[in-house]
Image (cartoon, rainbow, N blue to C red):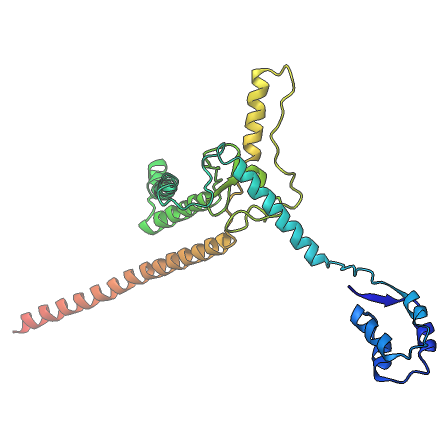
Length: 305
């Protein structure tokens, strides 16, 4: 236990005539123990009024440690994580799709199979859309306007342009949530988390997408329908809530650049083909002139022979 002196100047005046080492060491300290007080008493003469020194001793006040703001934020985050962990542990029997502290390689097999199926359907849909758009531009223009007599190059360019439009339409396709429960939210990585973990300040997704788009967003709560509501109103509310639950559509910032470059390449290819076609008649004409001159020389030589 530590003690301190309330009025140290008073003690210094009492001990100003004492020049021993123990007194000097005692005056240099700010906190004292019982052994320090006993050493001081033993070093003083017998007639010294030591009770005046004892009256000045008091217990040391405990030091107050002020925590920093970063420490407070960290402890608050840890407290929220512990509460969420306890809540998920409590509700794990309700939401059977969540896994807690165990690794089962076959538990996500159905989910991965659905993801592969979804990717395969997306690829097949893209091929059908782009191929159909190209076929429409390549063959459809000749069926609608057979009198135009368009060349192969022109039809190819029309098919490529319409096919690229179909591809860009696929890029801006809206992705619908595929989680098994309506109380789950799908991350950009494809994982599903509970709705109450969305925008709570703690990232639950591997890519932190549940905390990435929370600016100005109201936390999701289960909507309560008013009493005496009709079936049509319920269907409208369900449709509205489903629309607001749609995931963000994927946007590629390089789509416009790729489209412009593709159009420029197609135009240059068309100009190159047109230029080659303009050169070919003159070349054939010159070649026919040479053949005619050779035939004339043969006829003249045969007449004189």
